[in-house]
Length: 297
Image (cartoon, rainbow, N blue to C red; front, top):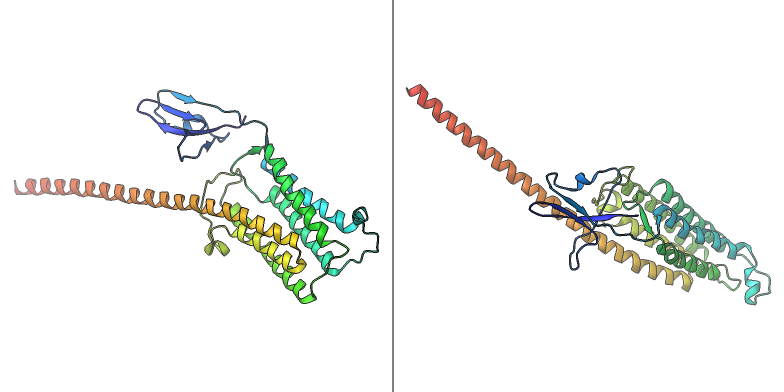
């Protein structure tokens, strides 16, 4: 069972509940198996009530990502190497253009990279995802992968000129390398166990945009489409851009809250420090006055 909780403070007890109450803007806190329940309380609660909710069948995020990326990685070469177009009525001899070969290499490199990142780079804040997401995500990636592969490798495909191909793939590879480096930066924000919460990434392209990993992901597909130039590829680019833009805006709002909370904590720390210093100065002043009275006597 996958358990989440949200903590609410009461005068005599601590209540940990799931789901979050209707209308509340709070996000549930995911239980960490390395912590005890007292780590989620103020420590002096008389009673502790935890309300559990069964979230249904779950899979690990690594399993989810592996399944969704494996499909495009295996399906794309099918359209390049096998005579699948004969089943669509094209009986003539197929001529493979260099841009189609480079597109295959680019595509396979991209999804192989993403699978390797899933197992060796990414740190996940949540342990599992609903099983239904596997079918949804696989439908998205596998369908678009087949859709693009069909048209890029089509016998009637018209290739772009050599210069446009080199510019597109060159720009795309640069973005793929940049994307990998962005994921390394994000990995370093978390501990090996995935802890770390929401933190503001710094350095490289993160000094320009909040979600540089999404930005480089979008531009690497732009490079692919410049080099191959198919309607299917641009449709995928538009859909992916829309999805990742929404993710980026949501993450930007969360990080703004983190930044605001950090600022409020800093103000509270400074205020407490000033209060303590004032208290110390007052005590010193009293001691000095007493010492002066003793000297006069």
